[in-house]
Image 1 (tube, helix red, strand yellow):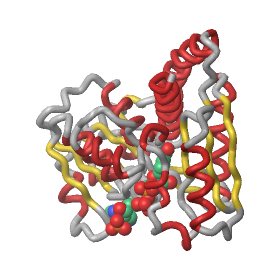
Image 2 (cartoon, helix red, strand yellow):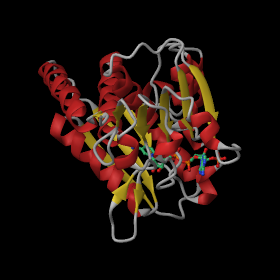
Image 3 (cartoon, protein in one colour):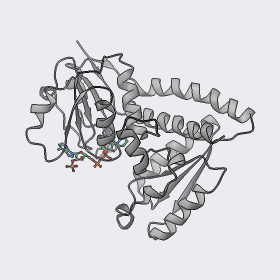
Image 4 (cartoon, protein in one colour):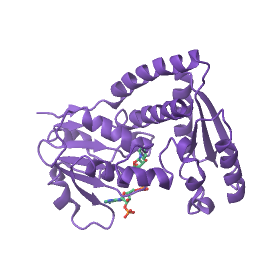
Length: 282
Ligand code: NAP
C-alpha cells in the first residue's frame, strides 16, 4: 500500500485563507502588517525564496519590502539597517535571508533583530525560548514541519523521531520541538556512523540534509511518517528532496512531496508569525 501524501500546498492554502481574514480585520482597524526582508548579495536560490515571501505578503495584504544590499555590505552597515528597522514603528517583522555572504555569516547578525520582530525565530532569544518550550516566534520551517506532522493526528508522545540534519534553522529547532512534544529524539548528521541503524527505528523521520537520494526505502521503517525538507536542484533544473520519494512511499504511512510539502508550509508559517507580531504590537 502506498503512503498518504502530506500535502503542504493544500494545508498552506487553508492557513493563508484564515490569515487573509485576520489581515482584513487588522486593516479595518487601520493597522497594516509589514514585513521587511533583508537580502545581502545575489544568491539565486535566495532571490527565489525572497520573491516567494514577497508574493505571499502581497496576496494577504501584508505590506512587504525587500531591502536588497550589495554582496560587499559591511557588518556595521548591515547592523545599522537592522537597528533602523527595529526602531521603525511601521515595521512588524524583520527577516534576514540566509545564507549571508561569508564575511557576515559568523558575526551574529541575527542577534541584532529585535526579538519582538524576529518573525523567522532565529534570534538566540527566541531559540532559547523555543528550547524551554515557551511561547515565542518559532523558526518558520520547523513550525511548518510540526503542523504537517500534527495534521496526521499521530500521538507523538513516546514515538521514535529521527532528525537528519543539525542546522540552527531546521534540524536543531525541529528536534527540540519534537522533544517538547514527548518524542524520543535522535539527531543525525554528516558524522553519524551507520545512518540507517537510526533511521530504520524511526516512527517519524525528518530529513533536512540537502542531499538528493540520501534516504532510500531500506532505511525506512514500515508505517513511518517521512518529512522531506530538502530542496535540491538537479542538473536540468528539476527540484527534488533528500528522500527517494517513489520507493519510500511504498513503506511510509505518510510522506511529504518535494515540491509541495514543507516549502509552502514554511511560507505560511512566516505569514502567521508576521501577523502575530503585528497583533502583539498593535
Ligand atoms: P545545512 O545547514 O547545510 O545543514 C545540513 C545538515 O545535514 C547538516 O547538519 C549536515 O551535517 C547534515 N548532513 C549533510 N549530509 C549528510 C549526510 N550524508 N548524512 C547525514 N547528515 C548529513 O542545511 P539546512 O539549512 O538545514 O537545510 C537542509 C535542507 O533543507 C536543504 O536542502 C535546504 O535547501 C532545505 N530547506 C528547505 C526549506 C523549506 O522551506 N522546504 C527551508 C530551509 C531549508 P553536519 O552538521 O555534520 O555538516
